[in-house]
View 1 (cartoon, rainbow, N blue to C red):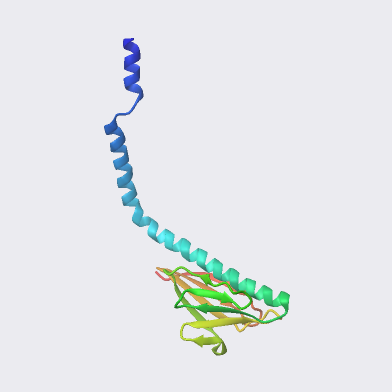
View 2 (cartoon, rainbow, N blue to C red):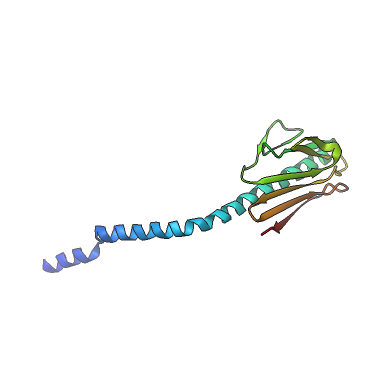
Length: 156
């Protein structure tokens, strides 16, 4: 019986050991947490730029398929975009700075503009710039072909 009691004592952890382990884990988490901020911003920028590229490419494909003009409209102050054939409003995260360069004929007002895709695949062209911290994503829309391309710049 004495042997069984010794095994029972050795097999478990004390409350102090458990609390010490939790305190160490919490301390390491607090130290590592500031390093996650830039990674989260980078992931948000990547996701947002992919969404905008996808919407632009979708607008072009709709114009080709339906043989009619499709308009992609971006409101940089409200962080939203729309497509002319859909009533849905697509929201973009607030932590990302947006810029739109487009043809003068497609500027609606201060902070709002659009890119028009034509039935032959061409467009009015332009550039959407997304910035989060030191990272910048450039979405270029070719006016002749309507091709949408994405490039990344590091401003820091």
